[in-house]
Length: 78
Image (cartoon, rainbow, N blue to C red; front, side, top):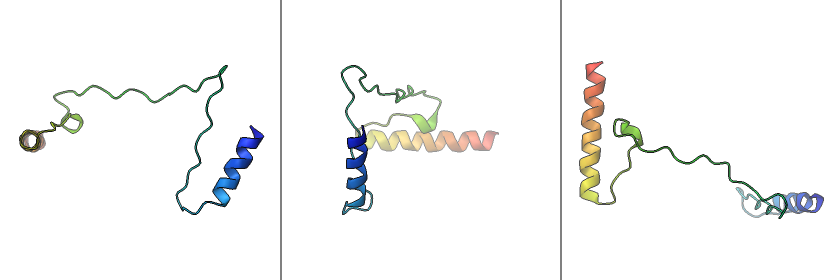
């Protein structure tokens, strides 16, 4: 582990790029790295900001128009 930290410090000091981030170490066989990123939440039709948009440009325009209409309707009703 000390060698990895020394290599990382050396990489940070001698990097040419401003936003350089050294790669993370690989997990060992006894203790593999576990991805703790939670899965994305499923899209709820009523949640206008969390909808999956279509790949088709025309369909996406329709979806965005509907979202804008519903958002405006919800803001004026409350």
